[in-house]
Length: 161
Image 1: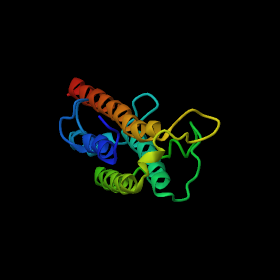
Image 2: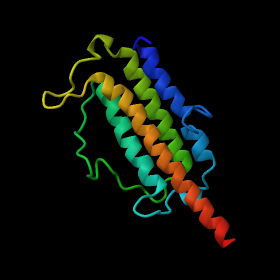
Image 3: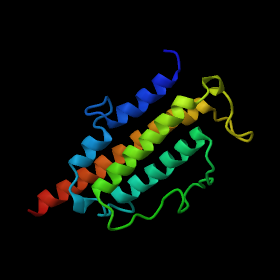
């Protein structure tokens, strides 16, 4: 397959469809999660924390693709793992996921495919392909964690019923 805007848009479409090859999409997964589970910790993470983390990187990718000013996100900092607002709802997260996807798609529409193999930074060997595919892979990875936390919380509820 030739790498194209359509290919990268397809990667982001997979995240939002029902029954993608990796399990369940974002909306499909969140639909099954009770509102009260968003902020319930399992070990050191909550579903809301994972969503905030995903959104931070999605916002960054959208800004990068559109050439907008952006802060560098240092790993394992509050910019990387923003503290969730305890009043934030599933509807809020779904709206932000929709907004960030739209921004990424707008960025992909204007992205110069001639730059796919360009390095993103002189000190690293990451290219634009790594960035574009990595954004979708990052979401899939954390979506798996969200579904695992949701399953653990559901199992705990069933065990105490």
